[in-house]
Amino acid sequence: TADWLLEHFPAPDFVKCDAEGAESMILRGAPRLLGEARPVIVIEMARENAEECAAIFARHDYVTMSAYEPVAVESAVSD
Image 1 (tube, rainbow, N blue to C red):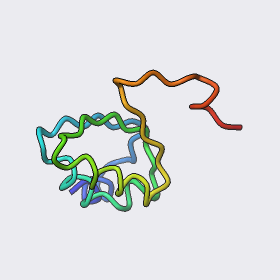
Image 2 (cartoon, helix red, strand yellow):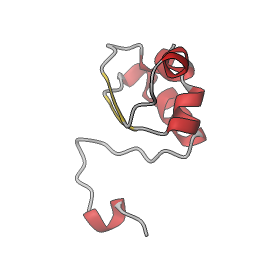
Image 3 (cartoon, helix red, strand yellow):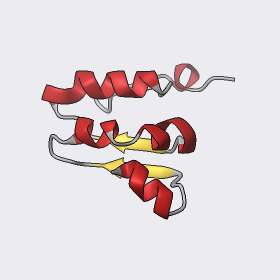
Image 4 (cartoon, rainbow, N blue to C red):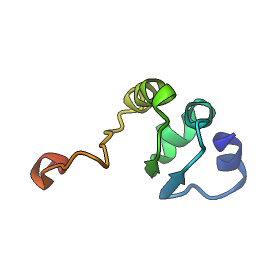
């Protein structure tokens, strides 16, 4: 799991995840990574598990953004 990796390697600042439909399974195995290390994550979520992935991110106070919808810089950055 991602948390096992966190126990054996330094915490990452950035994670890219392209798991071809297994994204929610990976995120379920990463509560410490998401809650403690809090790296920036770029993830491609399959439609069938996007809702579960979004819920996992929300539980850990992550903000999710779509690559398909433009975001105004002012709204993406908080003080």
